[in-house]
Length: 313
Image (cartoon, rainbow, N blue to C red; front, side, top):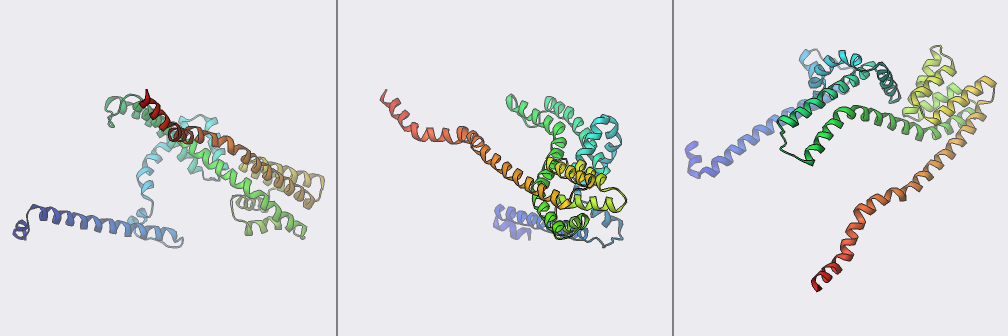
């Protein structure tokens, strides 16, 4: 066979080698993709039990298998190396982000410790080795970027999750309030109205209402359950709703009337918030117009005149 290939010259040998390597890579990638699809399918089946220990380990995502041992080792020192006040604030932020698992808090603290460890290593590598081969302003920019990712990355990600959840709750609350008003005025009790909302309006706010119902049925008072929900959501709209409901329970005011007033107020607030965003749009558009559109427009309009004047003089 080598004699046949040699008769066609070196180009045929290179082509045959490339074809063989391509087929081998295609086979390996196809097998890996098939295994990944199989693992994702098995992972989606809740009642499926895997007896083989190796298959059970392969069901865990690759990222967790690689970073898991390092994070587990750092978790032992994460709570000790961070101030107690900061640990408590991180725990509250996780609750407001809808993350109730204590293991997630420990993982976050561990990632923050790893980030602070990453910063001096990154600086040392940049000073001694400089693998990217950059210098000057670009070197300082990459160094600052690495420091920001290591120090501020986990905190920024957590704050973004909290902000996203609070925004979803704020947008859903007026519609949920309308459904509560309709249900209560139709003759249902407050708990039955919450149950109707949970079944018909899925989302973060419905999950909070489900937790309120669970705490109430477990023996907690309605006021305590609502206060706990307000602490978890931490939005002005939910705080106003909880305060109105607690006052209605305390003074014996009709819940339907209170809910109707809250629904009208939330509608007005949502309209005002939309108008505020619309008023901010022209101001925000000035930045891309000044730095992106106007320079190109000046080049197109004034450029030929500048060329003609320079040629004339």
